[in-house]
Image 1 (tube, rainbow, N blue to C red):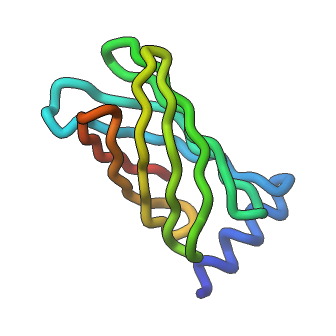
Image 2: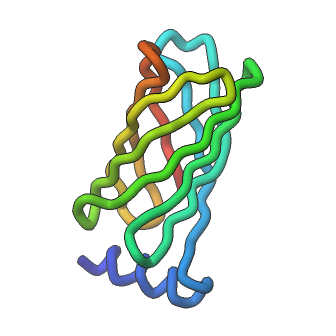
Image 3: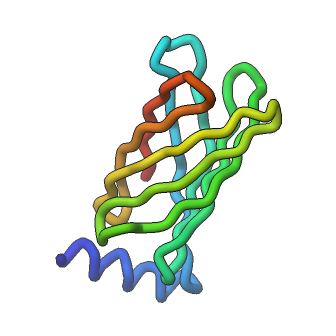
Length: 108
C-alpha cells in the first residue's frame, strides 16, 4: 500500500503521468525490444516499443487492480496482441503476444 501511495504521489508531482523505460525479449530470444510506458493517474496508459529487427508497436493499457494491468499492442507490420503486467508502481514485469510470438518485458 505504501508503494502505491508513493507512485500516486509521484504522478501528482509530475503532472499526473509517469514515464518509465521498457526492455523486452521474444521467447525465441532472437529479437529484443526497447521503449517506454507512460501511466496516468486515471489508471490508463500507453506503451511504445521498437524491436531490434525494426518493428514498431504501440499499445494502450489499464490497471485492472492496483498492481496488475492489461493492454493490447498494434504494430507497423499489422501484428497485434494482448499483454499483461504486474507493477510495484515504479517497476514491473509482463508478458504478451504479437501474433503467435510470445515475449516478456520489464519496466522501470
